[in-house]
Every structure is written in C-alpha cells, then in structure tokens.
Picture 1 (cartoon, rainbow, N blue to C red):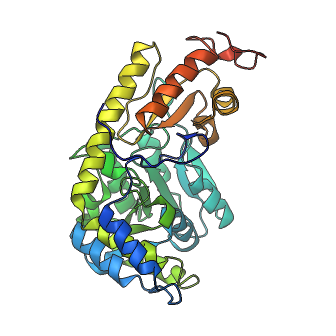
Picture 2: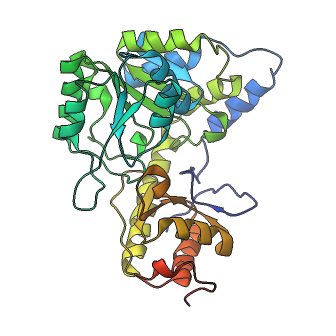
Length: 359
C-alpha cells in the first residue's frame, strides 16, 4: 500500500467521521496560520475572497456561490429560507439525518422516500421525482452517505428534470464529489438548464480542512441570493483562517489529486481485504466503505469498548446492518479487520453481546 502523511492523534482509531488521513495542502495550512495572526480583526462577512476563488475554479458567476461554516450550516439555511415554506421537505430514508433534523427544526416537516433495491440501499429516483411535485424542497445525498453509491447519469438527469418541471428546489449534498470518478453526475452539469438546483460542497473531506469548518453552495443565482439573505443573521460565521485556507487549497489541485488517488487505492485494497475474509461491502465512490454486519449497533459499541476503534453504525442513518468505515490509515484499517474477526466469525455477529469474544 502507498503511504502518506497521516495525522497522529492520541486516543482511539478514528474511522467514524470520514476524515482525510493525508492532511491538507501545505499552502492551505500556511495561509490559515498567517490569517490567525490577525485574530483581533473580524473575518470578511461577505466571504468575497473564497466566493471569487470558488467561482473561478468552477467556471460559474460569483452570484452563484455562497460560502458558509461547513455544508451543515448550508443545510440549515436552505431549510430555513428556500422553496415553499408551507410544504414539507423530501429526502430519502437511510441517509444523512441532518436534512430531516434541519427541516424539523425549521418546522417544515420531512417526508422520507424509502430506499429500494435487492439490499435496500438504492435511491428510488422515480418516487423521489414524483414527491418533488408536492414538496417544498428536496434533499439528495450524492455520492450517497452512508452507502457510498452513485446514481447512474440517467437517473440523476430525471431528478434534475423533475426539479425544473415542478419548480421545487433540489439540494444535492455533494460533500464527497471530489472522490467520485470523472464523468460522474453532478449538479454543475445541469445549471445551464435553469432548474432550481443547488450543490453543497465542503472543504472538510477531500481538502482536509475539517477543523476549520468551511463549505459552499453553488447553484441558481436566486437560490444563492436567498441563502445569502439568511446568512445576514450570522455574518461572521466563516472565520479568517477558514477563508484563507480554502482559497489556498483551491490553488493547490496537485495535493487534492494525490489525496483522491491515494483514497481510491486504499479503497480498492480495503474492499479486497474484506472480500478475502469473506466479508461483504458496498461499492463506494467516497472515502468510506459500508461493511455489512448482522448487528451494526453492537458492532459499533464493542469495537469501541474492546478494541478502541470508532466506526459509524449506519443504523444511526436509518440503514442498520452496515458499518460505515472511513478509509483512514492502513494500520488502523488492519486493526479494524482483525478486531471484527476477533469479535465474531462470519455470520456470527448476532452473538456480539456475549460476555466474551467468540474467539
């Protein structure tokens, strides 16, 4: 396996938050440190520098970009400000719970479209497209969290077309888009259609700036204007270090490319190791892999208690039976593989709550 710089943190193996083990661009770190020297000066409330850098990088107008304190803030702002506020939002079941939580916080309510397919892990695009007709706003995670799946281009196209036909804003959370193969469906390819589409992106994953908390939305200008208006209630939410670091990170596409390549290599290795041990995993276009286990809640708990390994029970997302495992350092993934075997052999994880390990 190819190795890279891995951040060493005391404590348990952190395979639960999809963090970037390779670190951020040296240029981004230098820019952030320099910005910190002016701690007595408020950050730019208009986020002009990152807005301009993102617009130039993506080839869109600056009025099509809004920058916020991570994409989580953008999920909340969209729930508060966009679409028909008298109608509930729609999202899929078994996905990132922030969409539902924010819609409920905004008192809009949320309709969840069940996942489908032989394993119950596929987005039902037909039902989702139909639901946009009566929804106030829609949320789709793509690549999907926690399965790591991508939609085929035709299915993604149908959802974008449904947003245009119904006029319901469709917010596509593309937090993991940088890891997806070239040519994968994305919101940017549909902006020219005029459909009410928004892409939410983050610098936390592929760019490795999770601690700085900065993300952005790109989409139709009127939707971005609505987001910016809502941001007026929290004008300084994106700090100086985050703004400077993001601009420098965008200028260092070489570091991003290396991170994406190393992640793909590690993902292939990890899935091959799982298969060699007889364990099933889902195909992924992200920096995590969903690993099938009979009792994901017990597995999450006992991996932490007995082996000091943190993973995410996908049951927390409404998708029990899978562990979402970040593609962290190789040695931590090897520890996870051995620990899972130590807790229970294949098909015996229903015995995880026994007082002693199976073997």
